[in-house]
Image (tube, rainbow, N blue to C red; front, top):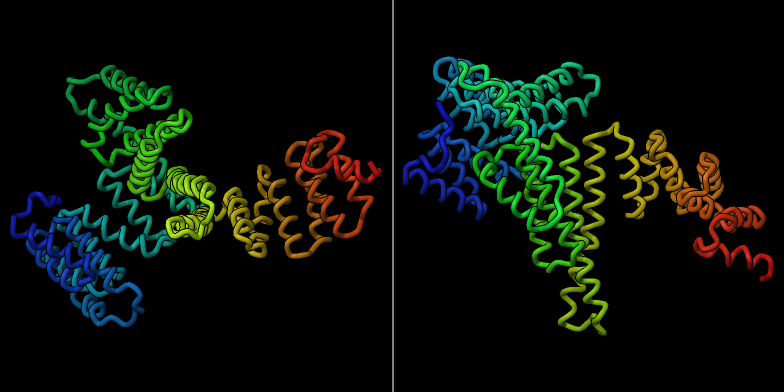
Length: 486
């Protein structure tokens, strides 16, 4: 049994789907569930309809406490026999349970098993995806989802899942091996090696190599760009491939990169603001789409999504700041909405930055660079106490060590723990012999703390160290020369 797209439904079935969508939009979730159960009873392979049904069920229980489920008990008593006799009936039985408890492990596992038996592997995968969304750290469940993807030939998705497992449990050797195997299979599939071996001589590896060379050339073209016109042409060339297969990770990622390059080129040439924003919006959309295909399995793509969203927010803030700087009275009724918008954006940026930083650490708890970035973000939010343990962990990363020690010293200053701050700054300064920008900053901050503590000679010694190599650094010259009465 194949997965059925909506366009293949009857007119009556499509009408019911539209009613269900409308009911869901106006929060009449019970009616939406009822309508979609009716459609899916007729067309079990309508996967998009099943997703709509699940969305309605999730919305209907949002905010409610989960408790004892009589449906779950009944399901356990009847599921086994129904599954053996009639997989489609077992799917209906599972959906009755999931209508009131959409994250039910029992209901989703029954749907997974029944859908596989009924020849609906995409529906089976959807059941496991629902469970994985509700239990993102359950590695046993993620192994099950990875195996499902491999069975379906969805090797890119399998790689993403196994990579998630390794992030949660770096010692999981089985996940590590399966990630590599799935990646190799994905490469073979994208390279069409199997097609050659099964072509009975009609294709040879030279044909394949030629096509591979074309693909590499296309990849290089997406990297080496000079003008907006060239980028536009490359995107135009790629769009037919994307329309043909919207789950093609390589094509989606390339288009995202091209739009990002177009955005950067437009910014550099001061192109009209509306055009620049459209390139940025398109880049965000394609990166987000790529991230969805990979189920969040590539942290670099996930980071790119959030970074560009912040970039968009900051651009809007800059426009508002520049305009408001020309307004004499910001309490003027015409200016007030923009003042409020700017204030909201600033709060949103701070909140979003902290949320993203925390999520990155939660997804990659052993990544010390992410620990450093979270500590830095917490400091910007004024949460110095929470920043301290993150920065203490980050000190173990050689690449972030000095910066983490510097920020730790600043945390201790904010908490008025000046003696500990002095030790932190001194330890950091001692670890580098070159008076570069980082050491100047550390030494200057050390001097300021020593001045607060009344240790004038030590304070001046810090300022003189900087003065000897950089006369123009902040107000160092004024402080040093002033100490001589000059």
